[in-house]
Image (cartoon, rainbow, N blue to C red; front, side, top):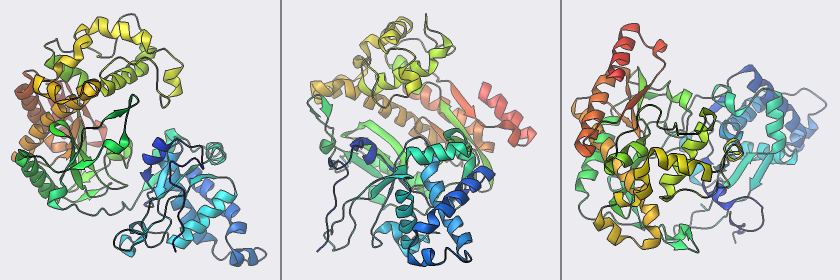
Length: 479
């Protein structure tokens, strides 16, 4: 009989269930890439030796024949845990060797027993926080269950910092060398719809986000996703896992629609911004194009208000030092459809301690008075179909839908021009030689759907591109 373990949200631990649910899958495709990271991995590997079983204990007095392998495997494990864990994020990894995570076909550089013996030793040394998963048999008789959660403890974070490994240096310290393979999706899985959620005691119920069938009238969305994924299947990528994409909607095609990349080492959130700049497509360097202040620009266009001039987050009476807090205020505003009254628990302390959200509301509405009536951007047909308690929530989902529609039209234009494009949420990644094509496609899509342009930013270290190409990109980005 299979032993059941506590669920991640059970009261057997004091951790935030939402943080546990949002854990990233652990990547075992990274290695220590700097002297400080190597030194940290070596130190921890040596500390683990007395805790790795009878064979290791018996060899303590003699030669350490397995030291090189132990350092290598410890470094891979630490790289996966610390790349995001230094910022407090959890990683998810299955405990049972029969689960998909440990399939032989994945060719992981650290095997199941070696991994968990080192994890157990790290726990003994107080280097990890750990929440057990839940084992169970599925309808096919396989032991799958919920993955366990791991993250660096305060002790490990302090130790890493003593060696110079911090969140700011994580992109350099832990280098991705072998992106984890991703299972391709079936054609019917290219679109995913979930039900419009409901609120329970004023909070959105996660249980209400049920999967639903693709509604009628989405044939064009399916055709677009087939064309996009078919084109990307022809491309050779380096620096990230080959993209496996899915467009996700909520209830109706007008809500949501962003395209998400699957896989632990995907190009959207599996790697950092610096790493993303090193991606190549068919051997060519890439550039990233983003809509400037996307939601704000779209909302003002839908409300018939002038587009933001200059810095969109410069508000009257507030100093430049509050800019991060102002951006965070707008993120919450779009998420909830109303001005936040207090900072949520997850708000960075540097924002929380700098200014109260109520102090931003007045200056924000002073510069953008149309936002006082932001709920009016919802078409009447959508308003009528949404329960009143969810209408503020629907504002952000509708803005996401408009943004996604703009980006789909822009990407279609790029594909029709013979180009290559990777979708971001409010932008695209394209080969450097296609920046001008992408800028025109985005401009045309914004004009068609909003009757105005939205400023587009080109993110690329131009010094890494040949000078003649750099000049073309620079000129195109200024148009």
